[in-house]
Length: 143
Image 1 (cartoon, one colour):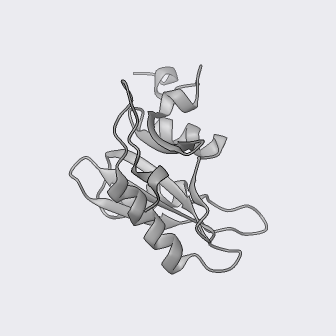
Image 2: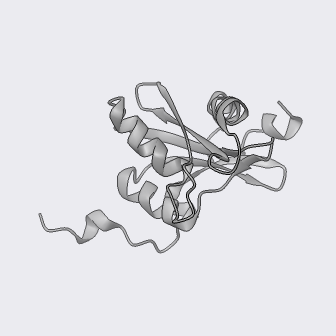
């Protein structure tokens, strides 16, 4: 692990879950091959379990690793992800979620922390920090 991956966030930000980052990194190294699978994601459930997944690129689009992670977690009964991270293949390191993934993560897990890289520092930020003035689907449902 590089020195930049060792630095925890400061102040009121959550500490970075380095075990989770390493889990995603290991999946990326082992299973991301070719153009179809280039990003791995890992999520920690409230019970401590780690779930992993990879993206499924297709020329018509395809789900990002974070979206595959949501389905993989549900398939394992992990319905309360507390932290997620995505890591690129070929040792590209932590990559931020795209806008679609940010919105879906917010809708499924409104209190989830997302590990991102800012310069050389890893930060664990609340999903709302990554999607300011967000549309919160649950707030617009009846009942």
